[in-house]
Image 1: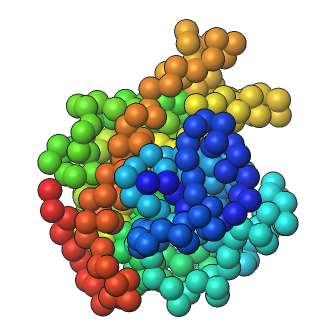
Image 2: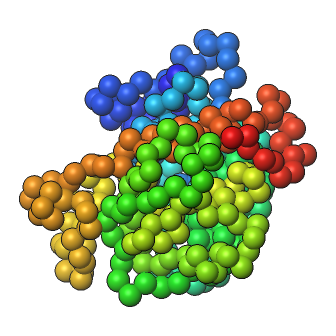
Image 3: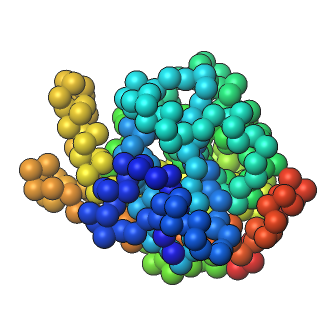
Length: 314
């Protein structure tokens, strides 16, 4: 089934060129089926690119997904036209009475700042708390993963000596976990960050489970509350050229930046990337939707606020 998104969203035409089918509000209204309701809090600076990345992944599954995009009222993005935000994004006051099957909260370009010094920290943590009562399963990505682990569990992020930048090999901790249904023993995830979460710090919190790690990238995927909250420290959603665009942007700014690890053919930017993560990225997001959301969420979403912790069936 396709993803249902607002009419005229720029991602529609971009994804049509990739032969990916998405559904407008008008066409979806003619189908007698309740789609999975998914909310995306998009904190990334290039919002249109991020929208396209997630729609690309979530459209590759047999479920119909209705996506809504959320913005912060206490932060004004510099890289996205205000007209786009007004047309396609909602404020928290618009959705705070709703319930959702799933939610994705993205990374943000503020990881070098202490959490409490981020100007929108009060608003974003209010949304974190709201999601626990109004969303069945929430997926936190990169900075949002670190922020939520700190907010809910007091786990602190640690600065890295150099930016973790590239595509890194990971292993599955528990092959019976439905999140990894269909995975190989090893898989790859892109990372682009200056901070990390230490496994030793996570071990002090038995309520937090590490599902996947990497020898080079460290803790990668974590879970709490039986799958009601999942944390992904990398960027499985990245398009093939995203790391290249980040690298060239830093080079043009004259910043000190290493060539992304395990990304370019022969480590040569002129030869282009070797894409080795998108297959498992599709599996990861589809398994989340299928096993952590669709097969567990109540048909009537009004029941979500009464739900406690759950155990996902393997």
